Image (cartoon, rainbow, N blue to C red):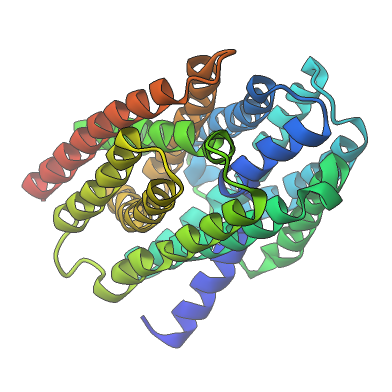
Length: 382
């Protein structure tokens, strides 16, 4: 990866991170809404779920005609609306349905910029290294963000949280011009045919569904991971430290992808990363202590950061123009929304975190099977 490509991938990654706060800072957002805005834990989970639903709906709609969109211009417009709505949320944050609808629209608006980042990375050579860098930045930004947001949650409060999210949108807005310009395909009939042919192939279908189930498992756990720490009497300072360290341990996983690329194919690194994640998931089920919580977080941080860029590289390899990436990220976001909703349902009123951890682990195994079968079919097809 030459210096110019690295600079481009770095810029795109910053924009992408700034437009996915629900994913990167979800546990801290849930904690702040519960502690400072009179939300129940379930309703705070639904707030994140509605934002994910908005994202998923947008991605699903545009995946069938993404070749004909100027995502760069569209992202600029939608980020303006997201910026305004986040400021509005800072004044009206309360557990009611109108707030959920606003979060849904914010999810729709920020997602346009986010998918523009994915397709921009896919348009360059060595895109698998670009996705690796993107995931690395997600873990770095998430780790630092969770550390400071949890540690200073009492100072931020709900109003400070949403003003901070508005600032993220404004910074992303100022950087949108750095994205490459893509020539849209104005032949609607041929564009639709090519996109649908890709999306309904067995290879793409398995990868897209598998990615959705993968994110469903991750978000189901991630949404309440801060609350799980609180439930075993870990204080805010210690939680912040663990969140930071586990996120920073995601960096080595991403560096493996950046350094090795496809040298060993996709299956071997994905299987390794999945094994590490499953070890982390199962460890905390058997022993709930400060130490096992910290080890679990670190193993998940490393394994997840290794698996994710290789999944995205596989989707980009299916269709360089972005339809599989858009559909995959749509189902990933749908999975995330369902994961947050499932988590809220599973913990119930009695905060049954064991059920949440067990179900999410089973879902993760199913996702792994779908993705590996898709990769094997792609290899046979080529």
